[in-house]
Length: 313
Image (cartoon, rainbow, N blue to C red):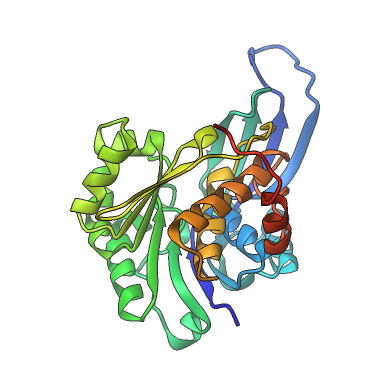
């Protein structure tokens, strides 16, 4: 049986509004869609993994409200193990996601119950790690308590026999390398998009950004390049994987789905290049539907689609 991913991160009730191109205060704008979805980097990645068919256990917190109930029911219904999700006294974390006609988005976020999660480093008990091969830290910067404990948590995960990965995400506090640097020596895989790499490594060149990460102890640096696909770097190799040619409706959660696809492929013994290509395909499914994970399909369906899907040149 395929081993799985122990994932920690934010769990957010998303309200997606589309299209919103030029919002103006004091007016009414008619939109096509207002929908509620599972959101947050931890929940998105976990939901995508479960949909693909990879075992996943999620750590995080929701509130004692209808939004939290909706999230837990949606996650469990998809096969996510939520036994390690705490129900806190604060309201469930929530976001308003405004999506424009091109699929780009703007988030308005309430931290809520996320502020109560991870007040101490994660304890990797035998029950917590049973059946898991990876520990993935899906949210660092929007979980206030985790910044102080992330490096220790990653170190403990490795001591418990797990491989480790981290998806950077945007830092609203602007601390970037200050909080990320202690994590690098404990990371087997680091995922960055171009904006995150630029803010962390002070370069817009993916190869140069990856070189910095690798020099700081990261094992594999994966650069998410949006419509161009991804680039994967090890100490002596570079793998460039072009994106699939699809029309983007909503890019919300695409990076989380990419990560899920990458880890799911590695857990099925794919090479790094194969994992990058599969991750691009999962992200392609994601961007064609409104909502981060709504478009994701099981592993076999993604593989079948890839055989005839066109890649961008």
